Amino acid sequence: MRRSHRKQDEPDLGVLAGRTLFALQRDLFAKLAEQGHPGLRPRHGAVLAYLDEEGSRATDLAAQSGQHKQVIGTLVDELVALGYVERQPDPADRRAKLIVPTDKALDHMTKSDAIIAEMEAAHARAVGEQAYAEFKRVFKLVAERQTLAAE
Image (cartoon, rainbow, N blue to C red; front, side, top):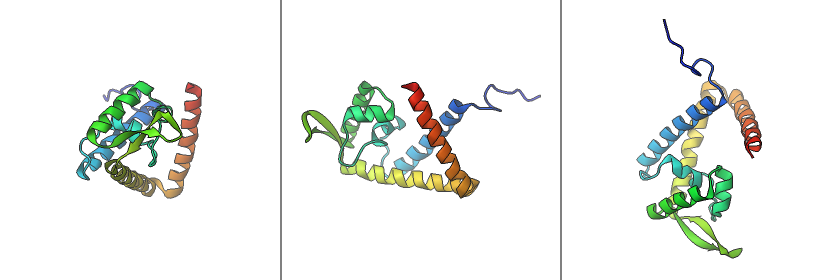
């Protein structure tokens, strides 16, 4: 007799989102390592996934990623040491710092976007373009609703 594991047969939103995120991260970071970015870890996505090409404030990265500002500061320190970002004065407010991507980070961002686009295209081919587009539309609404509920 097959033993049913809790949440295996009818996974809830958290389980599904977690499975998807962790599998996507494993695949993404393995491919990025093959393409010249072996030192990065999924945690660095809290900065790199939201970083603007012209730079971003740490407070904005924290708000967009849902991470505490202290966590973002630690990640930025790691990314500075790895050569992916630099801290520069914010031209709009000299007291503030911008986290600015280096050429290495811009290369990572371009490659990451291409890898994610291919993952999404593969899912769309597997389930159908229209079904995937509807899934993304609904998932975005659910994510926005959940984010607002958590604030």
